[in-house]
Structures are given as C-alpha cells and as structure tokens.
Image (cartoon, rainbow, N blue to C red; front, side, top):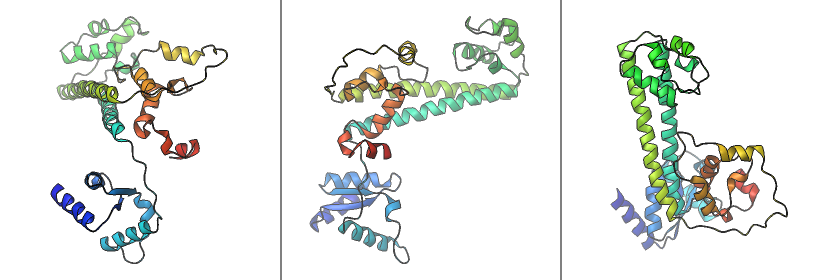
Length: 292
C-alpha cells in the first residue's frame, strides 16, 4: 500500500539513507520510485539482467544484500529515465500506437468474415478500410444484397470495373458471420474514436512543452528539393495518423526539422523523441545514443 511505502521512505530517511538502488521489474518499481523521489532520496534504477549473478542460493534477502554491496562499490549503472514533461507525451503516444494496432487487427477480422462468406472485396479494392470499402460493408450490414447496387458505391478512382466489383460481391450471406463482421466494424470505429481522444490529449501536452531554437548555419546555396521531399509534402495524412500538425509541433520543441532526414517521416521522428526526449546531453555521444 502507498501508506507502507511512505513509512518505508521515512524509515530510510531516519537511517540517514540518501540513495537507493532499485531493480526495474515490470511496472512494479514505478510506485516505489515515485515515493522515494518525493522524500528526497536519490533512486538508481538498475537493469535486473546486470545484477542477477547472486552468489549461493538466491533469496530475496540475499539479493537485497548483493544489490547493496554492488551499489556501495559503484558497480551498477543507472538506467535512462525520460524527463518528466515528456513522460506524459510518451504515455499517450504509446497508448495511441496500441489503438492503431488494434484497429489494424479489426480490419483483419473484417477481411476474415468477408472471406468466410466468399465476398471477394479485397480482390477488387486494395484497402477495405478506405472510403469505398467501408461504404460497401456498411451497405451489406444494412441489408443490401444486390451486387450491382453495392458496386455502385465504389469510388471512381477504383480501377476495377463495375462488373468485376459486382462479381466479387456475390457471397453466401450467413447471419452468424454478418454479426461477426458487425462486431469487427464496431471495434474499428471505436479504436479510431480512441485515437482522436489521444490526439486531443497530445495536443494539450505538446502545447505545454517549451520551444527550442537552434542556431543552424544556412547553406551557401539552397539544394533543390528531391523527389522524396516533394512526395513528403504532397502526401495526405492517413486515417491512423494524428489530426494535429505534428510536424510543426515536433520542429518547435526540437528546434530542427527531423523529417528532413531521408527515410525519416514525422511518425518515426516523434516516436524517437517521445522515448528519449529532447535533452540529448544525457548521452555521451551519437554512438552512445545509437547504441541505446
């Protein structure tokens, strides 16, 4: 209980303990870490893999004594901890990533249900989660069974002909599988609503982060835009990408446009920053950062 953790921290302070080594085990160390920090005790978070060689038969008491001995001799390395203001961003970004993966699984469940009814929608439409695919699936769940009426819902950009789409939409309509399809569609839309809520929370947290300005020498001649950079500018955001202007926010808090690196888009750059923060002085050099 939290009360017991506070009592333990006060007892450590009465014993004139000012630094403690704690193993990082799952998420169980977080509550203890926070309580000890609040009482002014410096906590060294160590990797359990680095301290597992306990001499003799292993017990909790022996392991505690072994950790204390290693800590006394300075033989343990403190783990990297993200700065406090970025922890909120990381939590929401990880949560959002989980919703994106769950939405992807819901699309797979839709595909499975359609295949069980021999509705070959994926053979004529590249993405069943797109505008045309969702319009057809909604009509099927609404009771429409005429393949040509369903084919008329296809967007004009779809390359398959109306006849090809109609042939792919002739299926064996089973009530149990249609229920399964409805559940998958509901899950898909629920995950997207969760993503939007995460976007709103991310917007608040990002707005509270301070901006940075880096003095970068301007090149003597502006290099012409590459084809990759032009495509980056022209591409529209996908359904699972944040609705906010993430690129502008990332540039504001970092002081530099990380997406100018070839092969790095805004999602990749923001994922890295949400995990390590913007204070790169915590790493000795670029080799240490890349190794981490």
